[in-house]
Amino acid sequence: MRRCAGGRWRSSTSTWVFMSDLKTLAGAYLEERRRENVSAHTLRNYASDLDQFTSYFTPPGGEPPDVRCIDMLGLREWLGSLYDRRLAAVSMRRKLAAVRSFYRYLVREGIVEVNVAKLLHTPKAPMKLPAVQTPEQTNHLLDEVARNRMERAQAGRDSLILELLYGSGLRAAELVSLRLEDIDRSERWLRVRGKGRKERQVPYGGKAASALEAYLPERKAAAGEAALLVNHRGKRLSDRSVRNIVKFYAMQLTGDSSLHPHALRHAFATHLLSDGADLRSIQELLGHARLATTQKYTQVSLADLMAVYDKSHPKA
Image (cartoon, rainbow, N blue to C red; front, side, top):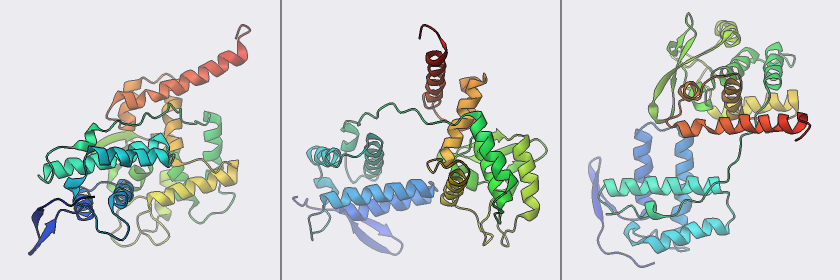
């Protein structure tokens, strides 16, 4: 790939550094996102996607190109390489979102004039309904965790994790970000920090309240640790640990290793809708910015309804 003349000088603490190559600018972009306090999960994904993007345009044994030398044709070839690798549409859409966000940063910084990545065609993701456990299956799992027949050391904490994931529809990252001061125990409300640093209030039910009251006396936090959920070292629990905890209990108690925290969030929304909750209220509880995101749960309920029809109606 040809090199473009010129570059961009930018202040970095007490020195000035030359910024023009793709790898340097990707690093600067990620550092800005880190300062914006985006979630660690999002930052990891964007770092991985931009590293692969940089590698694609870097010749073997060569230097990363000047970002201004990457034109629309080059971006289309990169997108075509994702199709050649037979990536899922969801993965391609995520990588494209990372590149588009990176180019918005480049435009904002005056490094490029146009966000050419915005002109790329977005791969169409197939409609895939989330797998949802029945209320009976979900409650059975939560009740078994609460009984602690496996005599786990932090079973009280684990029970609270599952009760809040299902009882309040929290994302794993939202759950681990909860602090003691975010809980109104008298009114049973949680102050939740969602995507885009948006806050919302979410209620929690009687079983979650019981699990909370049982957990708090046994919570062994390190000095100064304000997080509600802590690990064996007394530090804030990570969202990866939450995923591992859910997977462990699902595998041990139901034999289903595919269950994850977001599946309990899906169950929360679907069961509310099935029992008559309106879509707008579910949108608020989940913290969705757009109603269209919440509407997928209507399709889940319709799929369940069609299954009942096909099984029960004599003319089906």
